[in-house]
Amino acid sequence: MKITQVAAWLLTIGLLLTLIVVGKAYLVPIFMALVIWYLVNALNNLFRHIPLVGARLPNALTLGMSLVFIGLSLYLVGDTVVATIQSFVVDSQKYAPRIDAQIARAYEIFRPDAEAPTLDSFALGDQLWTYSADLLNTITNFAKGLFLVLLYVLFFLIEQTAFGKKMTALGLGLDESNQLSVVLQEINTAMRTYLGVKTFTSLITALLSWIVLVAINLDFALFWAFLIFLFNYIPTIGSTTATALPAFLALVQFDSLTPFLIVAIGVTFIQILIGNIVEPRLMGDTLNISPLVVVLSLILWSMLWGIVGMLLSVPITVAIIIICAQFPTTRYVAILLSKDGKISAIDTLEEER
Image 1 (spheres, rainbow, N blue to C red):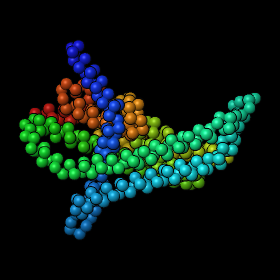
Image 2 (image 1 turned 90 degrees about the vertical axis):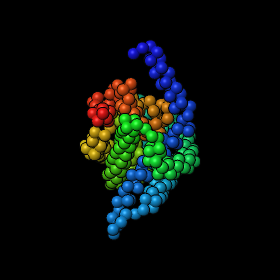
Image 3 (image 1 turned 180 degrees about the vertical axis):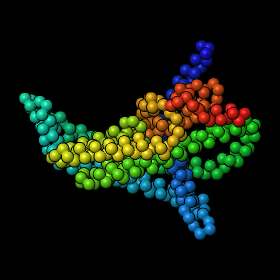
Image 4 (image 1 turned 135 degrees about the vertical axis):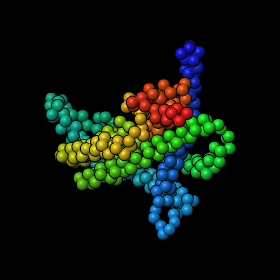
């Protein structure tokens, strides 16, 4: 590769990263709207397959049902999260003596000669209020931006009805038309499969985890189940974080270690069962991404877009691989990012030619 090509690539990557960072406030709502748009279409397909006598529900009706369902779900989730945070802040004084007791117990085991510190010595009370206020402020800002996201979703739904006509009106040649169709079909299939399977497995994981948490009477069990559902979209570290938080509360809430072990072992077993056995069977070979690339993309997008970047890291990487696979000059990028080096879409296209 010539030095001019290397310089061009580096300049292009630098400009893209600058655009992603500077345009974060505008790009994040659009990408979130794309995810919700896929979910709306998936729900729409599900509603349209509801058995009726001799006919299916009209597409406009099922799209409206999907939008209402997702909108109400987001509202209920936001209301639950805010109420849980407020309750936790109010009840935080109840947990302080128990945390002090657990710290003292740990010091008796590992440092018997040292004096165990207390929460007051760490001044965690003021920090808890500060963090809670910041979290509530973040949720409030998210709720304000949610209207813009749903507005984008509405425009995407309107635009998709005319997309086929625009494709025809482009007047592309046979090769270009086939290549564009392959790209769009591959991205659409991968995104729908990933979001559909991930949503389904996350729901199952959250439901089974909620049963475990309710069985030991853990405080805020529904909130922890929702957190498990949400964090399952974050690869690698998401499931670990979602398991550690309720396990820590169990350690604080109860005097014995049994509830803590039940949460830690039970939820971890559910995560392993669903994430390592059920999900790969349902996902198949749709997401042909190297595990190292998943971790690196998670780090990169978390640095650029925070938690939203963590949630979107896998879909964005999938789209990059599929797009790069369609062009000879970027095919090697797709091969390096893939799990086994097989890029089926471009191979199939070349065989047809």
